[in-house]
Length: 205
Image (cartoon, rainbow, N blue to C red; front, side):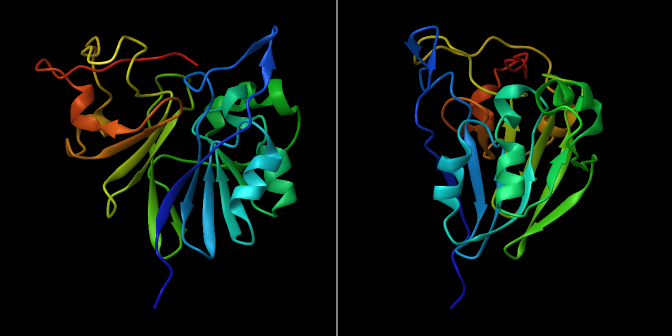
């Protein structure tokens, strides 16, 4: 019997900023995608040790960055080197990457690229909204998409309908019951982020 494919969210220990604890809303979600043997790390932010502990004895086939902003790549080099995995980033975010990691190298991530993991496949969608190199990662067979800062619910009170705006083509073409795993906050269904005028909430990096 094969290993069960699953998606896990890494719980990073909270750090302090200006004497205040970061809230869960402000923490970057780190996702592990795969099974009991092989996983992909999506957005290696936070502490590398927390990510390594969550990975355990599994093989990391790639560390994928949905964008080059610090919150999404701060631990990418330590995780990639420590777990012997390639780091993937869209080259349009090269300047953002350099601001965090200098001349450390990464592998190029392109629109339409397919990344194999644990017998499934991740499809890369270039969605340059939050940053020029922002990407979303779609797993069609599971009906899920990782959007980083490209698409997420706003910070309004519970029950508030997100403020509308125009959706990027690759995401608006996905089924409404696609589960969105964002870079911050809780997961939700894609249809919940759209109003009757087919609009969504944008956030900058």
